[in-house]
Image 1 (spheres, rainbow, N blue to C red):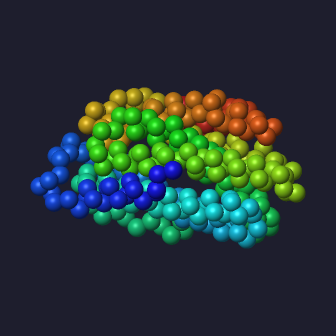
Image 2 (image 1 turned 120 degrees about the vertical axis):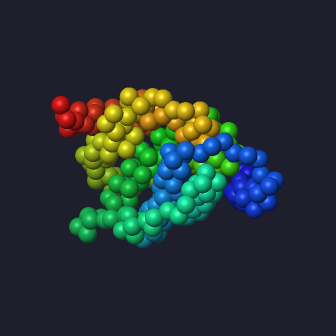
Length: 268
């Protein structure tokens, strides 16, 4: 595998080049700056959450391979945050607000085994979030031609595949431990609510009607809101259903329950 530092090195060289030698960039809209600013925050938060999850893995005496993978993902996410910040700056973005510290970690219930907290975070953050991130970033990358943004998306997409695999490896590991029956019950019970939260992130009200986007925004690595929902719907059939199905877990029924919940909560 290519050394993880190479894309950052290339981007840093670009950032340090004299301004007169930089190729002119397409105009960046407020939407471009807002989206890349959001990505900085999301990647940094992911680093903190993964660090916390890896601490739990250490505390429960999990597989050393899982612990090593978790620590590597933390470094990946910090690199993604730096690369995204570089894009944000090149797009003309200013200082970003400080993240609320209480959002930079995970919460556990004091009255349940740590394995349950690990399972909950692993499924929602990695099996769900990182799995759909792979096709999402693939589509974002396809239309991106601004070099600094393309380099960031190249690195992020490459890493997301490994992050996705970490989640499913962790779930398989938990289902091979004595805690397996409780983990299975937790996933069956909480998967519909996890899907509901995922839908609200990627399929907000009115998002399906927002299918247009300017070419100027597209080349900076953005895509219309409607595409997020389409990709998530496709991931249910192509990824979630078969991957959960390997463990006897019914993602399709959980997705339908989440869809029904969203529709019943929608204003008339």
